[in-house]
Image 1 (cartoon, rainbow, N blue to C red):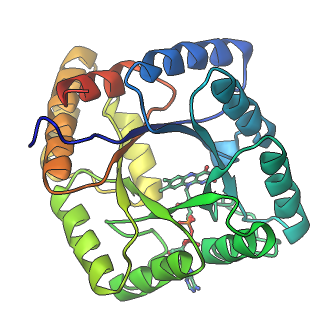
Image 2 (tube, rainbow, N blue to C red):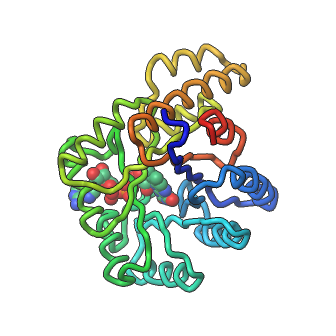
Length: 279
Ligand code: FAD
C-alpha cells in the first residue's frame, strides 16, 4: 500500500442517553478528531436511540469545528415528519446526511409513508434539491431481507438513481465479499464511491448479537478463536486488532475509497487501527 495514499476515515456514533454517556462520547470524539477524519456521523433512532440526541450530538461536534453528519431514517415516518427533520438540519447549516430506511422494533407494523430508503432519497432531492450530500447504506454480504443478490443490487441502484452521492457498507470481515460486491455494482452501472464499514472487535457476544440481526457474517475461524478466548478481553482485543487492521489494509490496497468505523462510542480500538494504518 502506498504510504502517501490519502486515507479517508469517518467515525460513527450513536446519541448518548445519559449525562455520563455524553461526557464519554465527548472524550471519544476529541480523541478521534486527532486522526483528522473526513467526518463523524450520528445515528438516528437506531436501537431505540432518541432522535433529538442525533441533532444535539451533531451540533456539539460541529461547534468544535469538525464535520458531522446526522443520519435520518424514514420507517414509520410521514412525509411531513421527514420534511420537518430536513428543515431542522438545513436551518443549522447541515449539508451532509446519511439516509436510511431504518428498522422497526420486532412485532411493530410499519405505518409510515415510506417503504424503502430509495423513496426517502427521492423525497430529499424533490424537497431540498442539491442542498444535501446524501450517503446511503449497502450490504456486501446482503441485507437480511434480500431476496436475491440481483434484487439487492437493483434496489441499491434505485437509491443511487434517486440521487445518493456515496454509499457506506454494513460491516463485514471478508475483503472478498466487498470487492465482489463493488465489481457487481460497477457492472450494474453504480459508480458512486462505496466506503467500507468497519466494526472493530471488542466483545464476542455483542458482535455475534449484532451480526445475527444485520446479516454480517463472522467467519468460522474468527468466531472459533473469539469463543476460545472466553473472558480474556486482552486476547480478544489483540486478535481483533490484528484481524481488523489486516482487513483494512486489504481494503485500502484494493481501492476502497474510505473506511467508516462503527465506533460504538469508544475511541481506543478505531484509534489504534488507524494508527496501525499510518494515520
Ligand atoms: P433499503 O435500502 O430500503 O433496503 C432495505 C431492504 O429492502 C433491502 O433488503 C432491499 O433490497 C429491499 N428493498 C429496497 N428497495 C426495494 C424495492 N423497491 N422493492 C423491494 N425491496 C426493496 N438504522 C437506523 O435506524 N438508524 C441509523 O442511523 C442507521 N444507520 C445506518 C448506517 C449504515 C452505514 C448502515 C449500513 C445501516 C444503518 N442502519 C441504521 C440500519 C438500516 O436502517 C437497516 O439496515 C435497514 O434494515 C435497511 O436500511 P436501508 O436504508 O439499507 O434500506
